[in-house]
Amino acid sequence: MSDMNEQERQLVEWLADMNEDDALALAKRMLLEEGAAPLRVLELCRDAMDIVGKRFGEGEYFLPELVLAGEMLETIGAIAKPLIKYAPGAEPRKLGKVLIGTVHGDLHDIGKNIVSFMLDINGFEVKDLGIDVPVKDFIEEIKTYEPDVVGLSGFLTLAFDSMKETIDAFDKEGMRGRFKVMIGGGQIDETVRAYTGADAFGINAVEAVNLCRAWMGKAA
Amino acid sequence: MNAPEQTAEAKLAYDARWQRIMDCVALKQPDRMPVTMYANFWLAKYGGISYKELMYDYDKTKAIAERAVLEFEPDACIALVGANAMGKVFEATGYKQLQWPGHGVGDNQPYQYLDREYMKPEEFPDFLRDPTGFYLNTYLPRIFGAFEGFEKFPVLPGMFYFRAITGLRPLANPDFRKALQRVLDAADEVDRYMTHAGQWNKRINALGFPLINGSNSGAPYDVLADYFRGATGMMKDLFRNKDKLLEAIDLMRHYLTQMTIANAKASGHPIVMIPIHWAPDAFMSPKQFETFWWPSFRQMMVDLIDAGLVPMPLWESDCTKRLETIKDIPPGKCIYWFERTDMIKAFEVLGDVVALRGNLSPSMMTTGTPADVDAAVRHLVDGVWNKGGKLILETAFGIPDETPVANVRAMFDAARKYTG
Image (tube, rainbow over all chains, first blue to last red; front, side):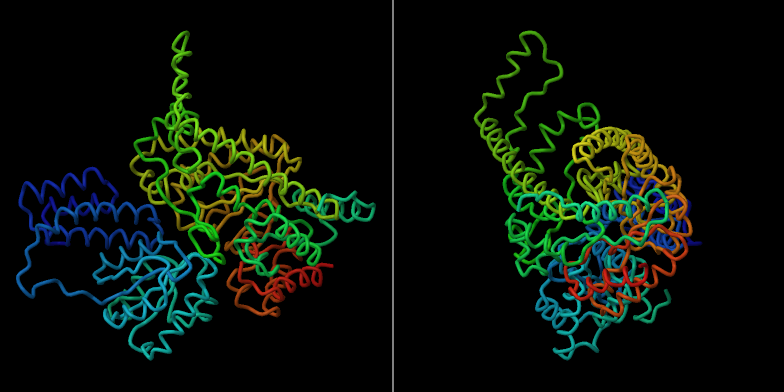
């Protein structure tokens, strides 16, 4: 953070403070008028999100701030990403790969989408299989995508059995040792974790990021 | 299935059960801890029918619901038929905000709400200026297929003199006429559904069992968030549309209060159940809660209390950090049902203000054993009831669909074993 110029510091501050109008206007000006390096702007966005995540962890920010931050980053990303020209082989390294989806029988996705977004902006490659995902789709994707972490989401009580069935299928396929499994959703607690055989559960998106970081050997 | 005459014995049982509930509300000591029954698709499993049948077959649902009440003898139950047998009215209205068994989800899957922006952010001014017009022209056609065509319904304000005559011409439009007929047909089905539901309620009352609530409502913020703006839309409104949002919440509070009092009076039952969706600790900051959520709901509860009603909010998820705020309500007038909030902590903060209801955890009810259920009831009895808490024992938000019948039995048995 110390090597930022005044304008960059201002962008980070406005993003972190939920000052959407000013932050977006500044980001657009930097990218489209002043020729700022798009990768640099995205790096500033990540710095801002670190602050947002920290404030969430400290109980200053809540879900609405995560949602608005997600919107701001999506808007800036949509402008910045087409401007990026990578040298061959110079794509940024990801911390790890996470496969995520809402288990079969359940159509809820708000929490899962926030987890996907938080993992993405925290440096993970995320593949989201959507909602009502059959067991066989998880198995097939795991074979080709080879994730480090599989995240199972569910809001309804029927998801307890769907999660257990999905995780049991990982065992049967002999793939269980190749990745960690985390679960989350409105009713998930330690009882459900034990019942399903998941490695861990999280009660919010920041916990999901911390779990993945810990599993990838990165400090939370 | 018509209501029998209430026998003297059934009347005594009814009165004793009702007194137990109302003693809790008034913070007086009842003869024992009441235990109530709230169930949705669990009833289908209990009765050996599909979820779809539970929603569509009025007679089967009435019979199964009665059997469940007679077997477990709750001190009060929800309107089990009214709460479940809604398949035909969903079909008739072309209801679009839900998927339900056999309609979007499988015959044995629960219904699921479709979270969408049913009101766009730029429509706040339309809603605020003329809420009735917004409902007729925009909102109802969005949420009910039957109302598609009502976009053509004339805007009434501004009509005058001859313009009030020529302004009626849109009512001759064939699309509008078709829509009107669909709505009238749907209203016939709604009438049949409510007749079945009412018959069951009367019969169960005659057999000695009160309903725990006679009507339902919503909190102003929640109604706008869930059914108009959508979850993420509303969260963004907290930053982008603060003033309009506060205005819309206040307008919604006004109409909800009027509607709730009218419905409760029509039901002849004072308790109003109000599921609460957006109060959980994680959903907004204390400042946002105290700005956007609590003032309108508190005012609504006070107005309901003044009208002689008993608000019964079901505080979903974990609301531990809200307890000190939601304590600010006249004592002895409400039932607070908690889902995941620690009941012992809730009792410590609210024990001298409200009756408490809940809250056996869904994960324990579905995956645990009868012994686990017994221990969980014992925990609540020791931590709340035996310390003077006016606890109405219940599951966290109704019997989870997957709960083994033995666990439900264990809940009712343990309530009686530990509190007489």
